[in-house]
Length: 268
Length: 268
Image 1: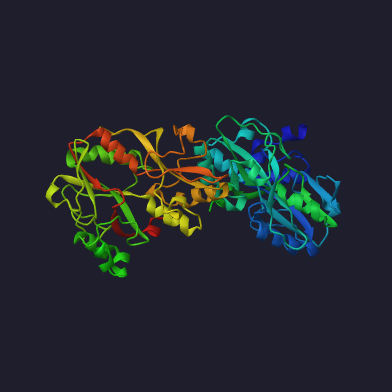
Image 2: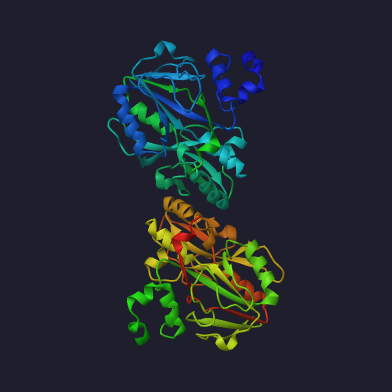
């Protein structure tokens, strides 16, 4: 962890400096603490031959797959989103999949790069969670230093070509009046999952054991709180695993793409 | 009912013509069917000596008391809201109160008029219910031809001078995803009660018998639906009854002020 300690606070706060620290290998940890206030994104890279289907899947399922930007095939940049970006090196962790199986978790994908890869950057809940906190709404799992609880649901996504499957949701508990405020706040952020898809009655969306999350940590729900469910960025990961493209690269969970755009700039 | 039948449809649809029909006595019924798409308002008239306290109460409690416009003392007009208005004759029913007791329910208040009366027009749920229907959300009590169920709650209003009391809410049941959409739609209409104040768990706001409404008709709630609660315009009526001003005039329930502004124009 010496690498981390050698970084000056300014390098953690500025998104371009944060990316350079990841490029050089000086930062190898998850990105939650980096560049606070700036959009962080889920990353999916697919061969061009699979890219149209995935783009269409995102277009048809904007709540679980809120596409911020997609690249030209073979491009390592995302113009307008991250200055001086090299998509092959500027994340602190990647996952490389072959036929749906994870074959490597490198911190650079230079050796795996292909000129037919299309990169998709998808909005992530970090952005709307900042908006919730700014509105004085406690985000429970953050307050407790835990991961957000996530669940498989019975909600069908709209299929597109070889991609299809069911929605994964994240859950944050709120008292009723705060749940209403959370709907209002996140409605303003359609680019990062937007409004909840469900609240109360988890069994209506196929969640039969709320106390045990399918991904992340189990929830902590207080008396009188309602579970509020947002479409989750794990959905495209599950869909990708099921579609089993011959080749695919994603970010490593928690190791997001750090962009230059402010979370606040995404407000609709 | 002959009077009603003699009115041409155009007279029912145009707000100014509808007011003239009420002024002439040709329309004496409730106003729900008149001038669809135009804002209808709750009316409160108080002596100037009580007007500041009530104005302050509205300012401090915008959800139950969304003030659209208040008049100068003695004025029978509401400039910008209703062309050629005479507040003494242009509603189809009034209630006259002395010391908090209803002493008359006339269709004109010409004989009760005082030059020190200040008129308050408060937004009404008719407007946001139109927005809900436009968003393909069924408003249950309307679909069933019933009155909306309303309940006294334990939610304290912010007091102002001689006015204070607890909030009355109206309830509309929705499936969870529709409840989220209903929050989104009504958030855009802060001038007519705005977003709900509560959903689920009625006991948290002091409603211990949801099946029996305190005002209006009892609810019809289907399995899997959440009760969603909005601040209600009955609140100022209850507050007025408790404050017992020596003199006061209101609209008769259901006999609203019909204005020239479209509901859609209230969207924030």
